[in-house]
Amino acid sequence: MVNFPLSKSQRILLTKIAAGETLKSHRHLDGRKMYLLHPLSGEPSPVAARTVQSLVRRGLLSSNQKFPVATFYLTPKGAEMVEKFRRGG
Image (tube, rainbow, N blue to C red):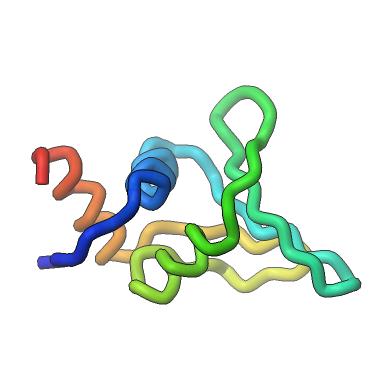
């Protein structure tokens, strides 16, 4: 069982990915990286790099490592965490 606290922004991001929104890392040739959350409809919105990177470090998110745009997905630990949120934990 995953047992560590997450910030509100981390919880929201994981929940949105679980609901079908797509998180992408847009990398530029000059080294810049921008994280955008693409909703099922409407315009994408930026996500703070520290939010994404902390979830990756904790093993809750991973990506397909593509260039120039990588797509993130929930790991089994991430899916477990979202299920914990849904149960009220």
